[in-house]
Amino acid sequence: MKRGWLVFLWCISAYVLAAPVELKVNLRVGSQPLQWGQTYQTPQGQRYRLDLLKFYISEVALVRPDGREVRVDGLALAEFKRDGPTQGVSVMKLDVPAGQYRGLRFNVGVPRELNHLDAGTQQLPLGVNSGMYWAWNPGYIFYRLEGTALLPEGNQKWVIHMGTDTFRIPVRLHDLQTRRVQINIPPAGGAILLNLDVARAFEPGPGGVFLDWRKQSLRQLHGLSPETSLLMSVVYFNMQSAFSLAQ
Amino acid sequence: MRRRPMVWAGLLLGVGLLGWYFWPRSVPPPPVAGPPPHPTSPRILFAERSVPIPEDNPQTPAKVALGRKLFYDTRLSKDNTIACASCHKPEFAFSDGGKAVSTGIFGRKGSRNAPTLTNVGFRRHLFWEGRSPRLELQAVGPLTAHDEMGLEPEELAQRLQAIPEYAQAFREVFGEPPSLRAVTYAIAAFERTLVSYNSPFDRYQAGDDQALSPAALRGMELFFSEKGDCFHCHVGPDFTDDEPRNTALYTVYKDIGLARATGRDEDVGKFKTPTLRNVALTAPYMHDGSIRTLREVVQHYNRGGEPNLNADVLIRPLGLTEQEVDDLVAFLEALTDTSFTTNPALLPPGGKGGTP
View 1 (cartoon, rainbow over the protein chains, first blue to last red):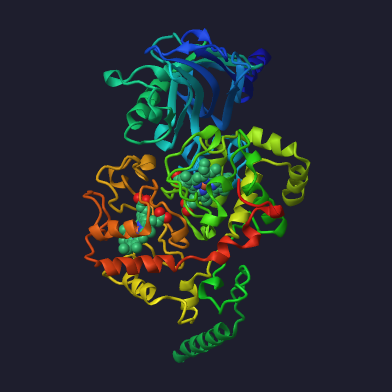
View 2: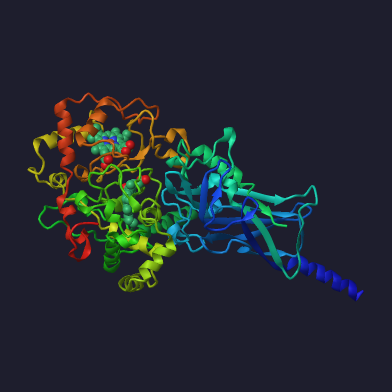
């Protein structure tokens, strides 16, 4: 009888008490760990180096086997800078009930209700000191990737700044149909490790369009001008599948 | 006896009305004093406006002084060559004298014309798209843009912290070490002192009949008439409605203006109506600096612009004679306030001659 109660209590507390979980990220270029300073090639043979990556994660939820979601409040700013670590970098701390999950989902971006508050008065990870505030088009840059293109005529800096409410990137890493995705969170907590293939942004889009850095207008991908709007969509689409769960 | 309640109700109503009438009401607070009127001029109407000050960034002399120093300091840029004043030069009413587009760090060229900062504290919308709501946030743009000043927030903070006089000034003004945020708050406070209301036009308004030439007077009539029709967009004390408009400058706009942000077809070619104060000092004109002289701008309006589906309804051939075009130009030239461009309080601090 007593035993039964204990088991019951244990079950309840495991369900109710939150276990601390760290969301960690490995940066990849294709399947290889990203290395600052290394020269890479796009599928079109353009050579480049990476200089900086920063992005927001928000609206995280873990998905239970029955499809119910455990939502996690909070907003985190992931920062990767030249010569800093790129593997297993902790980007967000979550508190979730211990148990079995079939994956997670989150958005790369700032939730709409926070995106348009007065950035002058907000604290980190928001506010202008984040380096993610977009002055000409208020709101935050959600995903900010910057690098250098090694062009025949010389090196040129390029930036990809994805932002505005239309470009909040949904990432869905759950699978209820098969049992391929299993995340087990023990009561003591643990880590969820994600891979992010940053080179995904450079995959060509419909008709083979790609970020051709020989064109000056495409070295600043951040708005909806006639030259850039199609590529904004291409990168946005590519980024939705740039994250995966690390095994 | 049925009358009783009515009597009571009447009495109560009367007392209520009396009370309402005599109740002490809060008097609206007197407006915060603006800058002192120009000493040599008659009372100027627009001088009585005061720049709106946001609650979270009150003006103090120390903050304005710090902002002024920062505005002129090239150390706020990646390669130490560019300050705000490099593109916003006081002698050109804080525009980029003669340049169609400006050059930022490492010689990188932008794609737009640097607007005047005359009375910029009164603008409700900033940038050519008009999408930035306040000066503090606008300043983040040039400070961090890779073709303007190009500093990351951390780098800017470290640099200023390493300069003892800045480290101390930020502590005194903000009670905290330098940061991108504090820099923008100080610069915004300085920008709110960039006020100009002493042009011949202002003096004429104040009652000085001699202030405007006959040509400028005729131009003024045209400007505010349905014939010239400038005043619908260039409205109010600063000659701007602060709204994005398409003036049919091109049939196909290379820079699509507001649509760059909204992605909407109907926003292609819309740019914020610029102020016309000190406009004679801020050539070349339009968002891309593509028109060299005021006369050519007026002729653009006179032609009714280029065919453009988004053109504002007010843009149409005006049928102005050559004389009328000249008169409009004379009026635009009468909006120049040299006491603004030579005001020592707005020039580089420490008597350092010239701008970066």
